[in-house]
Length: 266
Ligand SMILES: Nc1ncnc2c1ncn2[C@@H]1O[C@H](COP(=O)(O)OP(=O)(O)OP(=O)(O)O)[C@@H](O)[C@H]1O
Image 1 (tube, rainbow, N blue to C red):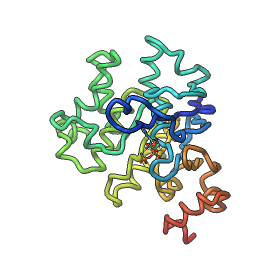
Image 2: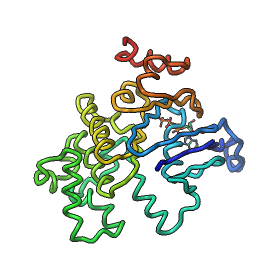
Image 3: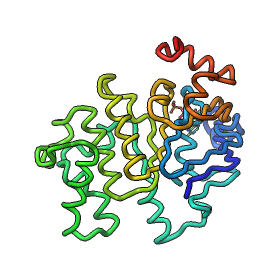
Image 4: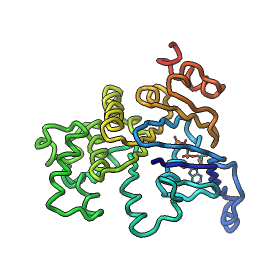
């Protein structure tokens, strides 16, 4: 059981000049240049690299929001491009994306109960089951007592609580994989560790496979089993989290470490 990218290449066109010429595009350097990555169930892989290294592009390919120009992405052996109809819908349920800004991804006037239940309606879960599933998901993300959160709206929550609501909205669908794109970078430093620990707990208790995208090695090493380092569209290093941070093999990883004071010292 795994979500796998093999030899993925993505090249965005670059506009040439303005006016009528802007319709013509010339190939730029690939945003992804032969990238491979395996996300198994029950594991956390951190995808680390500076801004522009291609992390979000890879995330979009993994959730089938974007098709690679070359290479292949598959889930449990099935190429994502072959998924249609019910199987595609089931893939959309099983692979959930968590975004950086929990405020933007939540509808401000909705109550927590409706935000978390939204996916259930889309995926045809009977109304009678929804309330119980919402309560269960809110409990799983630590928003307890549940009663005190159900009627609140996003502006009545802290940043960390909002991100937990967003995670509950995914969990309620019983996914197998979470693709979390910079899930703590907009949060107060004081609540980051709590949200990261929640990912660790979900990996253990629900066997989730979690891709944790971050530009920050300190975030990665906090919960990840493996670290994959990306630089300019390529994977330059990967391995067990402790090994990559203790004995970085690549100059770029060493530079990232030096820019992460907490780790640079150890
Ligand atoms: N829709 C797009 N059109 C054109 N170029 C794009 C597009 N999306 C990304 N790029 C380019 O592709 C490269 C990789 O971008 P990507 O957003 O995947 O990197 P990233 O590591 O996620 O960066 P960040 O942390 O800033 O989100 C960058 O050079 C970026 O400018």
